[in-house]
Length: 560
Image 1 (cartoon, rainbow, N blue to C red):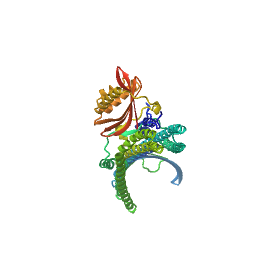
Image 2 (cartoon, rainbow, N blue to C red):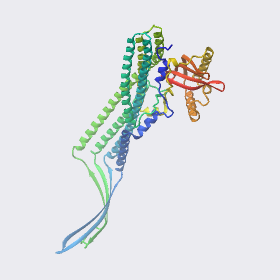
Image 3 (cartoon, helix red, strand yellow):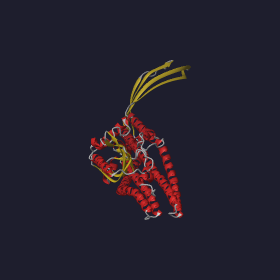
Image 4 (cartoon, rainbow, N blue to C red):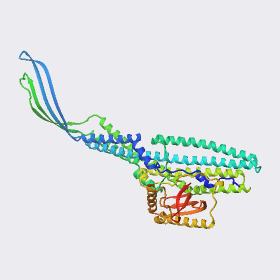
């Protein structure tokens, strides 16, 4: 006799996400966006412009060379006789400002501070772009997972309807129960349509930002980082690129005050001028053919304009100080807000994970109780809806937790570095097998095989928990993962992870063992993973096969 409700394994498999061999990892996407986004290009151009201003300011310390040549034709009268005279003269001058009240020195200092501020602004733009990409990336993954949950709910309800129809036809339950299922299916289909629209909008935002359609996104996570409020606040106040640019702007405005005050001082210029030659036809009675001249000019401004420029520079300096203080205050608020959000998500994550696992068990339990007449159809439908709600809450929690972490890292200017040095991919299901209905469920193995598999699983758990790579590797097929480069890449990745410092604790629960054929054993169980920086609970499926007279793992899959 067929049972009523689909199993938890069916739902878990339907909710799984595929992870192809060529996955689009977040750090790679961020680097691609930073290399071509117009905001980054604009900030880079402004940095180059500020560097050119520094060179201009530095050039004021060098003398100015000028060379001139003139030719004139005129008609003059000499001793009562008209004469047409052609005159050609050439001369050179070298002028040098010796003193300008220090204005040039302060002008160069201001330009350098502006250049440094432009460099900090470029980093700030890059951090904000990285955060936007990370947010869009994680949002697509969130909606993909929720969307898969909605479709899984619709499929489960459709399967449930076929079983209810059989019971109605047999006269075992009322036709009203079938109507109740139909209403639930309609509601779920409306929800799927809404989820499809939300996912399409997220995909469009992602494509507009990155220039490419999302392809095989990999769930992101960060390794051990200190997200305490004190640590993040200190890092933000020390390293936030926007705040650093504001502080460098204060230094630039202070230097501008020096420039304005220099304008109040007299200037001293030296000029050396020399006539290189002169040709006059016909020759005048007398003319200077060659000469040298040394001139020193002392200019003292007498108007009030220079005083007002000092007032203006002081006011702009005070405004820059106030702006930096306001930004520092806002950053402190932002850090406190994000840390509180992260703490809230961390405190509920384990409960949501347990709820997710319990929702699978509840569906199976309610289905069996309904078959026995101890649960109503309303209870079964509620269990299916509860499963989707659990997926929704868990997916939103993971998204908000990652977003809070990324935001805190961006606030301290560390997001791009973390994406390079502290980033890792979360493990998701490598490939989703076809759903298994209760009628298709393989028979359980006999007790001796079950006990033998428990021993194998315990050896696998201990090897992982103790970080014994050799023992861990020995439990997998020689060509696990496809053989060749794929196997070697998997081996390097597993060895790298096991070599990381810190303890690992792996627990196994709710084990189900099946044997599709004589050479294959399938184990499905609840896996709880804990380390110093990461906790997770998933449904793990290990498929075992024989190799060299030993049972070894041929396939490994995980689902939320």
